Length: 41
Image 1 (cartoon, rainbow, N blue to C red):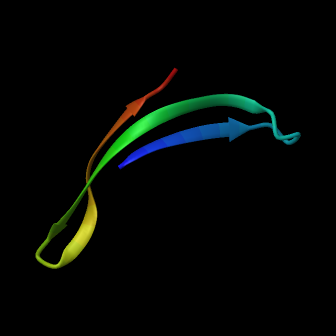
Image 2: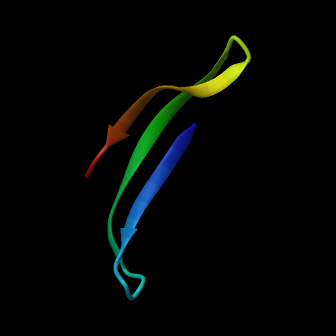
């Protein structure tokens, strides 16, 4: 799953943002995040 996070000021202006890649798997009937990689600006 690819996601993009943004940090906003109280006025709604974007202060910073970065992308992350999550590896979501199902094992033994349970779904969870197995790995995450973040790309900070």
